[in-house]
Image 1 (spheres, rainbow over the protein chains, first blue to last red):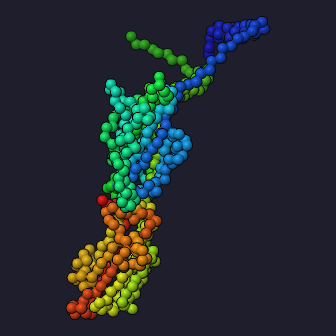
Image 2: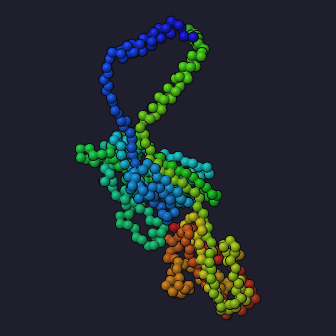
Image 3: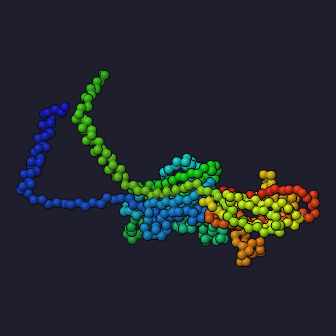
Length: 233
Length: 203
């Protein structure tokens, strides 16, 4: 039980404060200062992406489509689905851009897997980050200066293209392009600073492969999420 | 010196205090979580096992024999050709349409098998005097007729795959070249041509 004397000592000021407020309110006017504050927040998006696989692109359903992404401007989520077998692989490449007003760090990816058929251990995955290293810190590039040889020209010829005898595009680079750097990568805040374009964009290439030696012929399904965390610098 | 720590039992007020504090702590901790200001970029792959499933969806045979009997199995996986009256000069041209009914692109191949063992075309000729030619084809060409010079073959089986919902054609020509082999008279022969479609095993 609380000591009654202490309780009284606490209660008296509590009673006096509203009384004082009440009496003050009778003969007073007020002025207010209103503070409007907007929390800074991290805002990044995938500006463009590619799924490169030697198998027919029509066999991969993906979202968003190129047209949808162009309309959206950017996305934080890419999804795709397809049927696979041993040795199947895909290269997932995308450009991440910092769209917020604060600089950020792009961390190494983590994997979240819904694996009811216990097949995840048969998957191989590789991750490559591309930016530039300045004084020991990893930076991105200004959006329009992202090197083409690290994204635009990266190419895996599909079986269908090979079958049709289509030549490789000029300057085609097989993935992963050379010159990756370890994460995290520092991306400057979006927007022009003193007329200069900030280094707000970077490239990621991720390979996902079902091991060619996967032995089972049982049906399976798996959902794999590659999560890249972005934190405020 | 031994120190006695006399703890007072937690009374009703103590419990009330706890229940009042707990939501405050949760609110504080959630604020802290929000204050991390983190974002995520996520790629999600929904992957399922593909199927390898090829079917014989159509066939056509021409022969200089009237007794040849051709039966396609109900599962569309095999064709049986029986010839009870094989004679020197007997020939058969068989066209079969192969459909990829699965969800994976397939590398195609075929093998001649006799008594569950693979044999070559040369062995088939030497053993049974069956001159066998075959190939995978895409189109019958401008004349729209198979077994003519303009048939369009699959250019390279190490590059080309039979894609899902697509068709290829297998042309097989058999000629019984036994004019000078009377010892084969009265003999019977059984062999099979196995056509394989596999997602793995490509270049």
